[in-house]
Each structure stands twice: as C-alpha cells, then as structure tokens.
Amino acid sequence: IIWHKKIDSSPQIINSVAIDSQNNLYVVGGRGSIDPEVQQEAVLTKLNYTGEIIWEKVFKSSFRNFFNDIIVDSSDQLTILGSAETSGTTIEEYIQGPSSVEQIDFWVLKLTNEGEILWENTFGDGGYDFPRKIIPKSNGNYVFAGQSLGAYDISAGRIFEINSDGTEIWNVATELSSTFSIAETTDGGFITTGHVDFGDFSALGIYKFSNNGIEEWNKKYQEISTYLRGRSVLI
Image 1 (cartoon, rainbow, N blue to C red):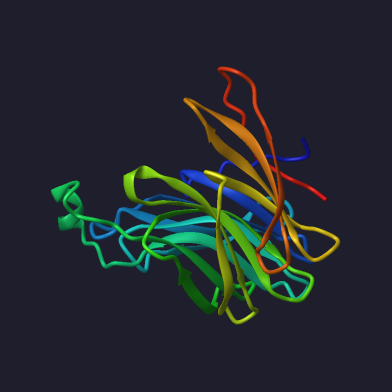
Image 2 (spheres, rainbow, N blue to C red):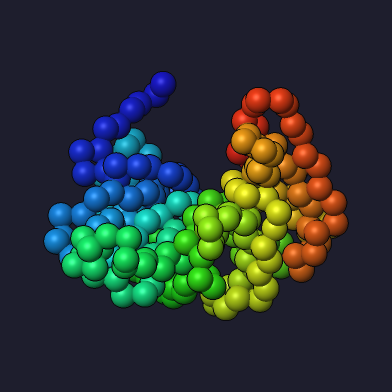
C-alpha cells in the first residue's frame, strides 16, 4: 500500500475507478440522498494522484440515480454508465408502495474531465435495468452490458452499442440472466460472462456475439447444488 484514503463524503457504494493522463482518479458510485425528493443520488469524485479530493459532483436528475462504471478516453473525457428513474416517480408515490412503478433505465453520460455534461441519454424498454460494464469499441463507439428484470421477475442479459454522440445503434437480449462483464474480441465481436438460471442454482455462462450483436456460440459451466457466476472476462 502506497496510500489509502477514506472519503467521508464518498458514495456508500463505490463501483468503479478510472485514471486520466495526469494520474487523477475518478471514482463513481451512489448513495442515499439528503434531498427529500430524491431516494438515491449518483456521485462522481475526482482525486489527485496522492488521494486528495479535487471536487465531488452529485447527479440527481430523477428520483433514483446511480453510477456503475466509468472509462476515460485519450482526451481525458469521461464516459459513465449508470441507471436513472425515467417515469417521473415521486417520493409520495414511492412511499405508497408496490402499487407505484419505477422505471429504471440504463443511463450513459459523456463529461469533461471537470465533470461538465457534454451529453447524456437513457436506454431501455420497460424492464428494471441493472447496468454493469461499458467499454470503448475499436470503431469509436461504446458497448455496454447489464441485465433487465421484466415481467414475473424474469431477468435477461442486455447488450447495447451506441455511437460517440450517445445514439443507439442496436441492442440485444441474451439468455444470460445476468451479464457482469463484456470485452471486444479481435474479430470486432464481443465476449460476455454472467450466469444462466440452472434450476434453483446458476450456471456460469460465457457467450460470444458478432459485431452487431448476433450470438455465435455459448458455453455453460455447471456444478450440482452450486452457484456459479462469471464476474469478469478478458481477451
């Protein structure tokens, strides 16, 4: 350990850290909000290479906001993957309980290295979305993965490709009940990992897709009475 830092105002959950060309650190996650109209706020914190906080930015454009992953490009611009409530749910509706429905969608933001939003967009089609991983593609686009919880609590893996302006190019639902990681392959396609429902347990799944989201092959690894899940995949 060279140094460690406890950030008193940090997110209750820190999900991802990235570094820029000046060795500054960017930390993303989320926490409960003191704003009475917001249940959860997304947080971006910038620190220098010694761990001193430079600034903290809070994002709470809706009732529920959260950051899950961050990448920094060669120009030190930030791309963040998270989730946001998009149906306009209020705190009063939330308190009423199950009769009120939150719409949680994938949320992607492009920011300067000072945390100013260049563009943002949400993606989803009715499910309760759980974002996991975003990666830059060799053609300049972005691909992100996660899963969506739909009717009868059935979960499906999701993959989206968007261009550098945040416009969706394609998306696909997969057999993976969860998708935790994705990487681009040398042929321009993608490899993902997560889990597939296996009776009362789960099988570790690895799925290969073409560059436009067509499944090419998959492998499942099972053990009796055991939960297996893939958390990260590398090329």
